[in-house]
View 1 (cartoon, one colour):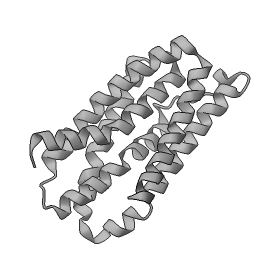
View 2: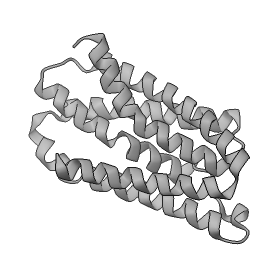
View 3: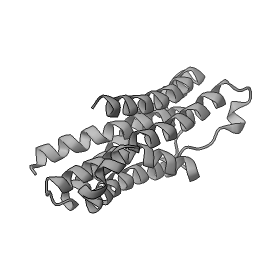
View 4: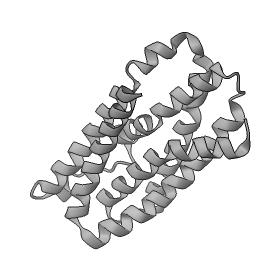
Length: 186
């Protein structure tokens, strides 16, 4: 598989990570270096790991995974997005807001943004493409796109406050809806 094609696939997969990173950093407003590292590292790691898992699973489980992967991504993104909107709308929302770069939220976002990469890994197995090089490129591109999204979102959040925070939660839910619609219409 050619490098331009691998980069194009990686960029396409990283767009969800970029959007989720932007929305997550809007919620945080001020993002520390540690939070930036955690989100970028985990999104890159999961974007690398999922194609490897998908490729390893091969063709035998492809139909089963495709039947539910979009629903898992939707559920995780909708849950995190709804929590963000609720925190922004609740008086004292600052007190109940959870850091999306820690704990279960971080894992849920990492899985939700990388489920499509699992399907790409399955596709690579069917095409008999060796997975290690494309998976590394996918992981690095996701990490870089996450960094860019974090920087953009923290600037927007600091400037526009709760309105952008609500929008960020809605964007997370919308990404989940888009994933479901894309899979249902494909």
